[in-house]
Image 1 (spheres, rainbow, N blue to C red):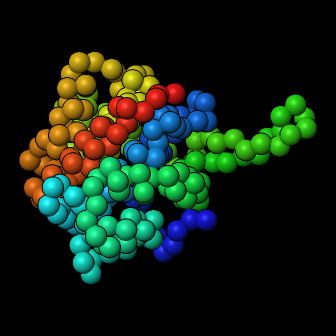
Image 2 (cartoon, helix red, strand yellow):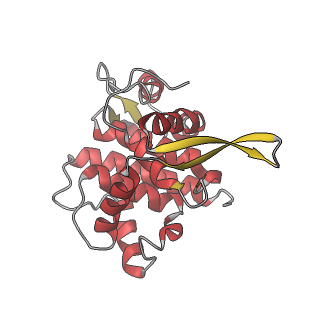
Length: 226
């Protein structure tokens, strides 16, 4: 069941899962490492919303009395408000429960459609296909402008591009985002928090987000890909 209440604006974790959705196959790219990436997106959203701060030894904590307004993000803030946590500990605790409620939101928004099909005329199954909103195309265009055209990103787009890079799935976007040395280099810059002067985020927010993304990268590297 989708966590409520929710804000009208999509969260970064919704945008990330929508980008990872592959309309041609109806699948989600990077399923084997998905929970780390989605957890990273939630933490990035909290960082950009100034709901997180850093504690000693690079740990994260929820800013007291400043919870997020969106219910999808609230469990992560509650967890981090209890006491400071290491980023990888937080990713492992937050990420596994995210896929289904985030997917339900995308379906409810019309960004992804869900349809029932019969297999062999007997068994009913559910398939996913691209929705009617065209929001995925717009998000992909935003990321392409940053990675390919060299545009300075808004903080949200910078976080999305960095998390896509962290997921290891960027090569699968080769038709829209050519997998070139310049794209790889720019993606790594975004992972490190080098977003450019126009990215509207305070230095501490960039630092937290970069820490989240790099911890996601470190966790994902040691996991099997599939």
